[in-house]
Image (cartoon, rainbow, N blue to C red):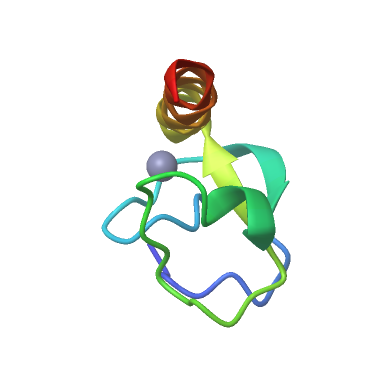
Amino acid sequence: MALDNKNGANVCDVAGCDKEAERSISLKQISKSSLKLKDPNVRSAHLCKEHYRTFKKDTKTSRELDKYY
Ligand SMILES: [Zn+2]
């Protein structure tokens, strides 16, 4: 399978992942999570189901941490 998604195919943008993307998240949001992208210069990243879950978990955790401080 081709790794570049210039043809518009929705592939997860997380480094090392080539699963089908389900969500598009802005880079600002991504930077709040621990996810690392294949291309750090994109404006928004596509995430597969699995990485979207990781993203949600990460951002939720940081929000909860904020409450403690
Ligand atoms: Zn993924």
